[in-house]
Image (tube, rainbow over all chains, first blue to last red; front, side, top):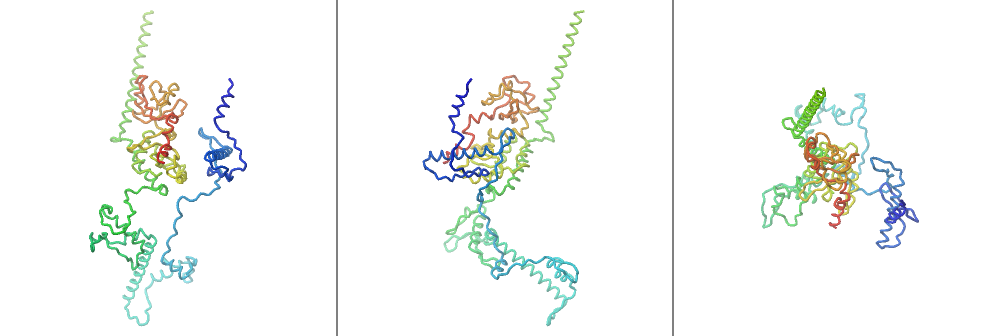
Length: 338
Length: 189
């Protein structure tokens, strides 16, 4: 049988895989991309479609020229290294807000110097920390049993030591306050929201409805910024049982973008860890539910096993009776023959 | 495209576990690469994380498919597996049914497996159990649900249905349009 005609016919249905191209395409097979730098001759839809087909064909041809290996009923090729760099998916993260000290240092032109953490102490004869635990100041403060009084200071010994203790406490507290303020600056919106508003009773003032809170425009002696206040209002606006649905609105009050925790969906990407944890939890629940354990016995499995055993026993008995019958028949035949 | 909610995760995993049992854990926690479940136009896709990140660049309207489509959610929120998930089911199947060469074609046309066409069945398969259907050369053909347990299969007569066809690879031809969200994409535009 001559199949060449059929083959030719089948072949004629499809376009040729050989494409003529004056200038080769710029291939980036790693990204499965090709760039055609030749100017377009015609802008008609048909011409563009044909051009794209040809170019895709060229790219596919190039793919087929890559070294391939077969794996599990499929042919695989390893794509080369990507040459085109794609832009990142999300916008770049914003730089961290400088702390108060960093801001101050910038204005004053104070540069950070690299200083070693350990310093040599001649008294000890070894390297000790410059500051903090086991530093010189620390050791001195701890081993202080005598303090020099300044001229004109008439404090008693007890007073001196309690005063020093108090001063130390005040310094620590001040630092804590500073850290808190820095946190506030850094977090900007979120932290400010929780502390910018004090709830008061619902009501009207001079005929105008006011939100159920009074704005506190200062925190730690610092004026809150407009953004911080706005954030505070947006938190406050959804801080009722109805998520602010039935509350009075102020004029020009922006709609709060905050949503209840319940409705929050996972982001498409960026929370894979959380997602995986959730999946694992659900999978565990599904698997454990599947095995219906009844007093330590998997009922469906037990019934199944019983049924199989029962069947085998019956089969065995059947075989046995057949065997016995055959034996009897043989015996009777033999007896007849005799 | 978005991750599944907890309710959806439950639906998907429960349906998968009907066929592969506790092996769903192997899908969820893979050693080779990070894989994720994603919902897109009512279909659930199972794909590598880096592929998902690439797919994010495609507009939602234009995105037809990515990775492996496991199945789709019905309007009432039930989850149905589609034939495209066969690779994973076949890989992890706990209970299997083999059909004889004589009734292979019949199964691929969408018919149920009769007792006469039953070549082999995993020992101890319970009734109403999700099974993967293979031909005698161990090529997966589709999946279904048993009508009888293994022991009951011995008793029933040749014309009885032993495994209901739920999906078979013939659907790639019969239901080509329905298998991807391409047609849905057209509707949306």
